[in-house]
Image (cartoon, rainbow, N blue to C red; front, side, top):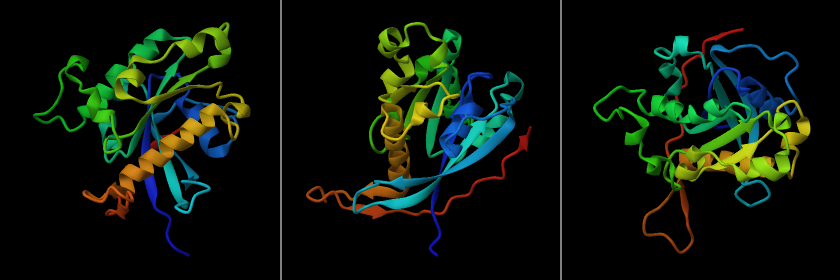
Length: 232
């Protein structure tokens, strides 16, 4: 049997926004029964069909690295950010501060190498780093949608500044309900499309000068992933 390639997606956001519940729902297709605080990093894995239903369909592993949001570990969790093939930013729809803090999370990820290109504040952050097929894909997820009054009439008019500036999709979920990511739903389609973008950027490029058939050339596919630290 041929080996199945994988991609690594980091899931970040403030403590208590529901990152662990989200990753469990995505990978296990059912709500988590007893969510707990993540210390360090927890990894869940999902099989995903890239370009499902097309001649280019292929199976990949999706690794979701749920990074603990405690500020006590801010100076050490950068080890989980490299390499990164995609980013899921998670905020609590009942906590506007958690949405505003997504800027700080992106800043932290961009500053992980602490080199001369380090941006000192979000004002120095260039959204174009996350725009376009050649840039790192990103998805913004708002959780606890069931706790927002008049969700259908109000919440979908609110979109994250991060999502707007970076050209990312944004979805709103109740992670306690399986139907939140039911097959064929808008959220499920956006999530699948995001996974496809991550895989495409990781393993395929469009060969320059070959635009007539958009021929895609596989690129180097091996990847080193340090063993995650997980302590429930």
